[in-house]
Image (cartoon, rainbow, N blue to C red):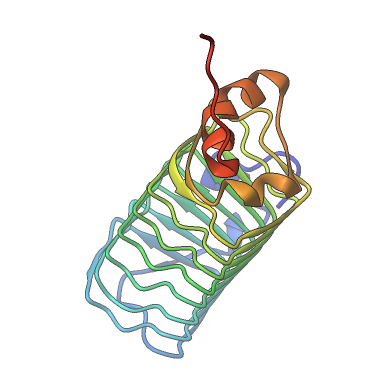
Length: 219
């Protein structure tokens, strides 16, 4: 995505091309310049669907399968995925704003140049996912599982991490300095590929001590 993430539909360079889409995405469908707005999509099967230069606004996915779908230059605002299967999906040059991902499967997904802004992640499975140049801006990540994932060039400005799992994750150029909270539930050893501030290091001291079996006593 560009340095500045578009905050409104009208700011998209392809906004004039968008056409209303009122049906349900279908399996292996190809959608270009589609605008999905105000839809409630329950238990759909849109696996391997491809979206390019499209927009989703005020759309709710409840359940359903979009496994191996591809999002290329897609803008999303106020999108909710509840118990939705997005495993092995591909995200490229995509932005997701003011949205909720709850109980969502994203394991094995590949995300490159993606921005999440003011989003809430609750019990999201990102195991074995690959994230490159991804920004979580002013988000909440609660009970998010990054086990076995690869994170490169990922940032978390204004974002709170709460009980995040990093077991066997590989981090490179991950910047946590602007995160508002670092609640690492497991896999603290994976932080060797991350940068934290001095204050955050003090906050992490108890979990780091437990990891290496260090006993701290003042008597």
